[in-house]
Image (spheres, rainbow, N blue to C red):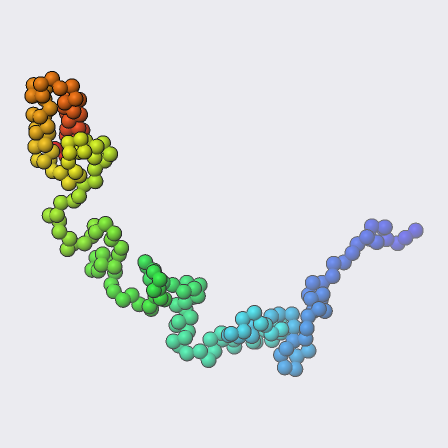
Length: 205
């Protein structure tokens, strides 16, 4: 009879993680140290991705005196901090074009109403205070309006006074009482009335 149950034979002790790690780790790179180098420490500036291998005690000692900006001027440090705000990616001014360049450290002009409208794109001349506000806007006629003007023999630039004068002239010419019962003139008279009605509803006369 065995002195211990059969279940004890299946018990396995998990190996210690640190012991396994130490067995594969290189020797500490600290001068005179023979311990396993289980911890990584950055080499320094311009050597990103490269590391020293130290033991636990020596990596703590190394990190206490580590300075990424060692030997770098204050201006370079300030520049690095500014570029870090944009992930060290280049930036451009608003409305960049073919002649783009990196944005300066400080704005060339103050923001706000004091000059903003002079720098923005204004293809429709909405914000240009120097424009002639008394100049009439050229109206673009819709298809029905353009056809009605063509029926009266006028162009798009015709004013309301021109439309009324032309309408009276054509009505007198093609009215049934004045044309001697001409059927062709009657159709023309009907077209003139319809064209004038369209222009009047559009507010052109």
